[in-house]
Image (tube, rainbow, N blue to C red; front, top):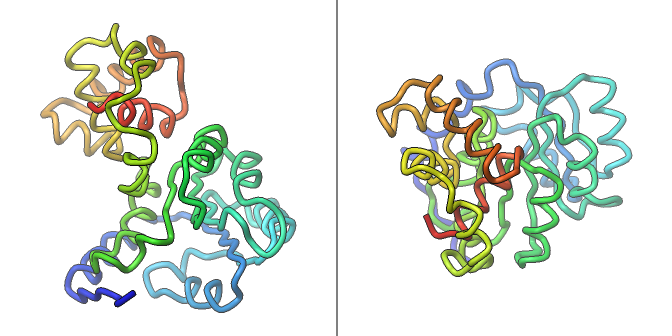
Length: 227
């Protein structure tokens, strides 16, 4: 693979990421020591990293000791399961990196309530800083799913998902569509020219009607329904 680099774009995204992270405290769990060291020293991120580990047992200790609010992990680190770790700490913001790009993995991530799922095969392909975008989106309360997820879950072909959203109003569908795009509440409000409170009201109605509270589950419903 030839790495695509766009310094102007990635520089802009890195700047936005730094702003999006705000006061976030990150624990990073990656199986490769080289990847872990390199990632934790990315300029836009390093001031927010409170701990790095290569196993989930070590990451768990760090999460409990540092009161971190954001976990970034491999699905298969040096030891342990990143998905299981994300599920245990689902009250935090969680982003999972994976090489297992299949429907089973997507369903595992969905059940674990992860906020972001990044396929390793897509990192560095576009030169647009997709990994940094994923971190920024999750930091701002949105959901990030690698673009290939829509192909894996058969976008628009799931009759169950279409039935699930049948009772939604047009405005609620519009909000759910934006959730499927990974947008946070403030961005959805801006996109649809509504107030953030109205957006939250629509989301409460959506959650009640579809019976799901996890944002990633709502995003996948939107993707599966093809809206």
